[in-house]
Amino acid sequence: MKKTLVIGASTNPARYSNIAIHRLSQFGHPIEALGLKEGTVNGIEIFTEKKPIENVHTVTLYVGPKNQPEYYQYIIGLQPKRVIFNPGTENPEFFSLLKENEVAYEVACTLVLLSTNQY
Image (cartoon, rainbow, N blue to C red; front, side, top):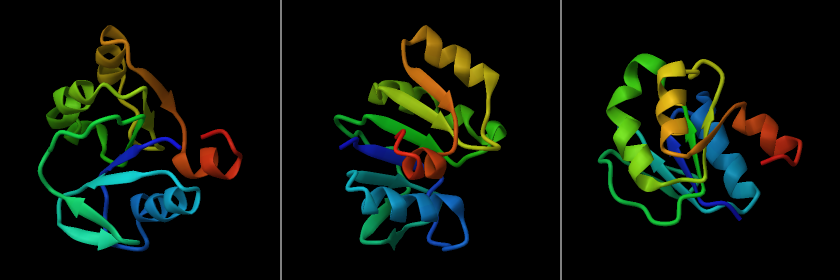
């Protein structure tokens, strides 16, 4: 199982980050969730502070490129194995930083990766 941090987590059931938390749970992946507002999704608490998290395998982004710079150092500091840029979050500047810090990244949809057994 791949411990996953969902950045841009939302309690709104219409948001893809919310759906991703549900699907990741269904597949048995341990989940951490970081969002702008506190709340709970499928029993997972959404935190609003960038706290240290150990053994993060994957960070999946649901935050647009213009709001990503505040997360650059936080994500790199977690030393994840990969970062998934979901549709609309693609960011060449961040791609370069991740590459420099030897963090793999994918431009993909977490929901599609899960449903096609490629997660």
